[in-house]
Image 1: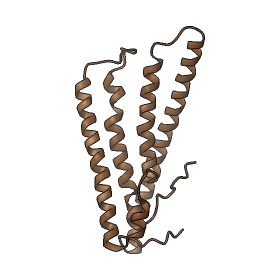
Image 2: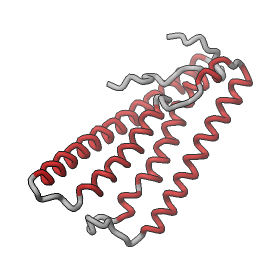
Image 3: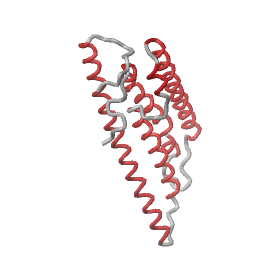
Length: 185
């Protein structure tokens, strides 16, 4: 499918084929892993919410329900964001990049990538600092669960987002969307 965009990077057809096949394979595996994680998180969140509502209606509210649901929702948000980043489906200004040609387009795209990846590097670093601060503490309603486990989604999610951006960067440089933009099965 031609998008009418000019490629930013030119390679020989043989090199493009080898690089493209490896990136597509890595992207496909990464996508499948993220999809499984997101599906499991959605199912777990649904079970927790249904149990919480059911027990509350029966007059025996679960003490851990609110905290567990909040943590699952945060995890779902971070892992889902990485999945969407893989297809470059996040809010952006694609019209600007699409209208530019040649070096100006490459420059704008690279500056944007550096900004996004830089933000997530800082987020991962901050997430690790949070891990250090929470070392030895536990969740309030589930004292057997370390607080660091619940908050581990911050650095992990940031790294997953960076990986997703890097895996989809070659398509962006060639002027293509993600291989399956917006089409999750």
